[in-house]
Image 1 (cartoon, one colour):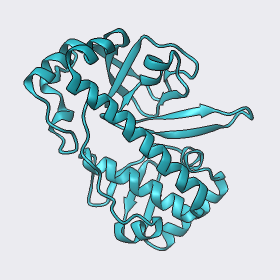
Image 2: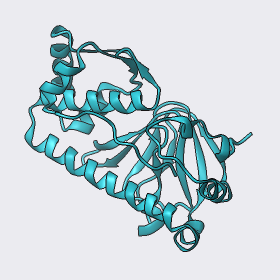
Image 3: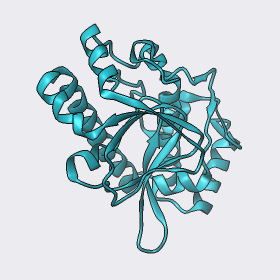
Length: 242
């Protein structure tokens, strides 16, 4: 059975802002059900015009753009609490694809109800705008990282960003979390070759800073990793939950 918004497990995470009773009631009406997909499934396809919007409830995925040479650019990873599909809702079609890396459960919303949100619940509409601004900020930061940092700095930045998000979700502790992606996915996200990514990960492992083995990530020295990445403040800001 679908999880009630009132009992949503994500609302108990400190990283998500509190919602009023009226907001929870509205979200329950906004929600149309849940969708479960297997690993490797395409949730949204670049160029498609989906009538649905989604929030990741469980599981992990990624967003990517297909390239003319057959490769792809990973835009970012999709973690629990992330809202996807807004591009199709506002621009008519998706500018990137969304794929499940693990089995995922997603809350499903009707795109047609977006305007009801703006008319009837401006606080929720503001939260949606805030999330769009956060996404823009992240993409700007990523562009700076890919354009200006060395391979070692990029990989350190990517691993630390991912770990801190998982930690804030209660999915990481004592330096360990699940990292179910392929090295190629990390390479595609950071603008590196697979060979360069592999050598960089080996260097971090030899320095006893971070170790990625299979689908498990261990951060042995987060301070050292932050110094390599050039991150002064690696706390995860609290955010709205749609």
